[in-house]
Image (cartoon, rainbow, N blue to C red):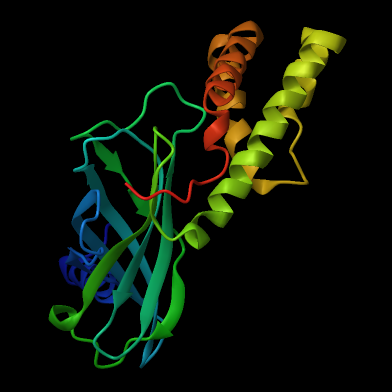
Length: 242
């Protein structure tokens, strides 16, 4: 049975009333002399749960441009959405190219896009979209010459993940040479329970292996290791500021 026009209109009205989206421009509140300039918008979605609460999710269309005269190896920045009723949502964004030959050179854009997915429940009663704002702040940058900008305390998590990933790559390399290609493939597919950071990074090797084969995945792993060895002096931040 086909629904009548009235029922169809009612269904459409229910769908439109169940969720609301609005966009907020990003405001760059980084400290003076920041080597990165951020632009973009955040799309905020509200899915009502009741009279005064909603599931809040957001999609960050955020790009950071390297406005310095040096290549960037890594950065850490924060994004905070502050709603008119005082509620707040924040996240930490990281760019990490330590294992990759290509870095973000002067003038290059770094895509810091993220989708919060399921979101979180919070009070949204009397929320005014036009009084909601989103601020981003650059917290730390590491340059290819070893100098840094910002506070090293913001880099602790990134540097820990870097070391855990390096250890995981080195282990897989050893497995290949000592136990062979078949065992290497088996180990690549196994989750790294001891480090979610390393496991997340190795996931791209799993995908690469499925697309290009085991030999190509091993060659990609060796490329990452060679790049890391060339940048070994950057494993920890320098106290020198640019």
